[in-house]
View 1: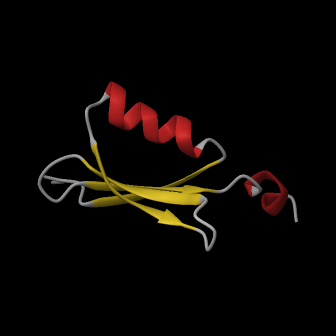
View 2 (view 1 turned 120 degrees about the horizontal axis):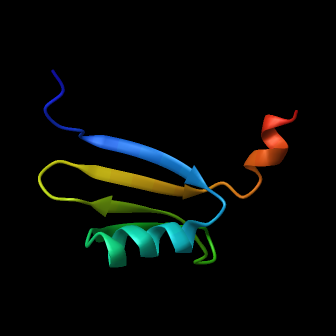
Length: 68
């Protein structure tokens, strides 16, 4: 039986919108952000309590990759 989810990773083309949803609507905490060399966000690590975390990464070109 599954008793807890420890860690999931999502890729999205709407990083800020998805981050805001988990933070604002669900009350999760953004623990830290992954940034590109020039400070542009490429992902974040979101905590839900205990050892349950969600990583969300920018993947705006995912549709192009899936077609190749």
